[in-house]
Amino acid sequence: MVVVVPDEIDFSGALDGLVSNRQPQIRYKHKNWWFALENPETTINPFESEAVQVTDSEILPDVVIRRNFNDKRGTWGVAAMIRTLHARDTSNRQSAIGFGLTTGGKLLVGKKGDDLRMMFTGGMGLGRYLSANFIAGATIDQERELNPIPSLNGYIVYNHFWMPKTLSSSFSVAAFQAFSDQSVSVLSVNNNAYSKSGNFK
Image 1 (cartoon, rainbow, N blue to C red):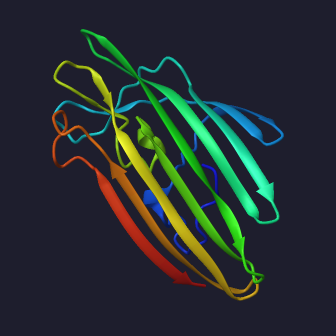
Image 2: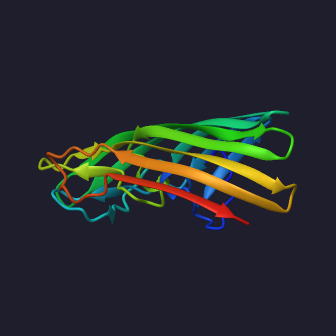
């Protein structure tokens, strides 16, 4: 996650566009570079099922590299992830590579403290990192092989102060789109979500 969540009354505002997962990790920071090894967990849709299952058969940690940028106009970040999706049953063991790229930040607008916040993410097999685990990381086909699910999501938020540091409003639009292979997944599996919201506080 490369930017704070939208400044809304609902803490999970713009949820469709978020990338966030709190979990054990080992992180190293050097100036504006961050490196992390994070707890792996593969989620799957079994063949012709909309259920989301945890495989509990991971081997390697998820790897994240992030670069932060800061100046008087605001903050920005870019992060990349690579992960190994893994599943096994009594007869075989399957693995696949998942990866993703996310970018976003907060840009200051005007002199009253207004800001524009945004984040955009794309990749394959990101699963539980996106939109509060809205989709699985992969589907299982009839050959018992893993098929990472491609996806895109993001949000744009404008935060306006009517009175400095006391009275403000936020307006957000968020979207999520997965591109599940319909030949190995059911039509009822989660594929897209959209939201918009505003508040006055």
